[in-house]
Image (tube, rainbow, N blue to C red; front, side, top):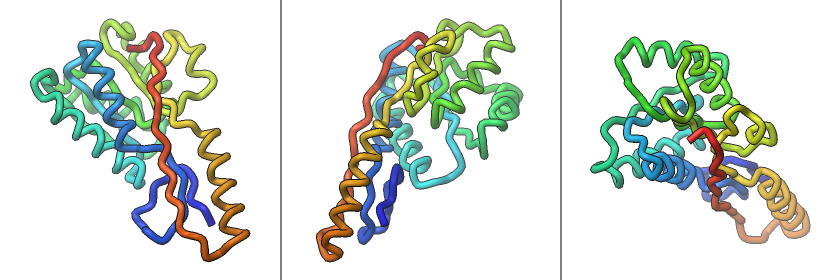
Length: 187
């Protein structure tokens, strides 16, 4: 067995995943460099990846304290809960000017909602996702995203699994790939 796309706290499990802490750090660094200073993080249900992305987000916020006025984290069970979560954030008085989304699916729902509120992206609110899904480039505006190299994760996981099948006693392999920012028009 090889865990795919999720880091594991279990030191005895093979896995291949993106560096989720770095995902959160990249998102915040990019948003700060673009001038955003009130960042909302729409995170997914509490998975290990969600936990690590939140850790990276908070670490980067702390590192950029002098340039970030406010930050918040909201957790959504699924993309269908995004609108309710953003309405709740508005009722709570969270005046965010950027939203970091756990994935591109959530980012699409965020963009849909912001447009329905007549907010301009990226002028009023910047949006960044994670995954670099094919359709992210053709959205209006095209979505800035963080590429976690899903294809490469699959290839590397297959290699790890084949090695494990050939030699059950080979050392545990824990492969963490570095994510890459793909800047487009939403930030």
